Image (cartoon, rainbow, N blue to C red; front, side, top):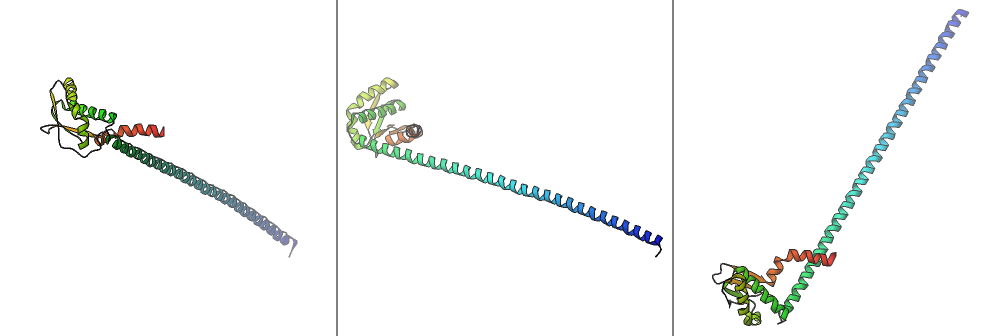
Length: 207
């Protein structure tokens, strides 16, 4: 091969090598760029997964706390209601004991509930229903009660005792025609005032 031909071949080989080197370099750059891009994507994906996990963890934590607070509040309310009901039960038992005696406080209370109901009725001919043993406690006081009722209503009032009733204490009053009836038994009064009393008992027990 002549020197001219060798030179041409050498130039071709040299250019081919340069081109090959350029291709390899470009390929390496592309590979590096791809790896960097993938690395960033992987990092972003990793961060997204971690962020999602953190968010779910926070939400779960908040849910657990919220449920715990609700359960604690419900338990507190249930316990409070139990204590209040127990207090009412004890108060009722105490009232039963007092109402089974001729204690002056109870007799005065009985007189007051009769008078209160008679005034609410508006006076007139009124039947008084009490438990059997309470009749004798106020029988000799009804004329005085009638006088007080007349002063309050302006209407002549006459009391008669009706059939005895089954009650802890107190009285049911009704006009003879039966059109108006006032239940002032201890049970009825407790029931009427229970909401107010519950609030007052709660303050005493828990404040």
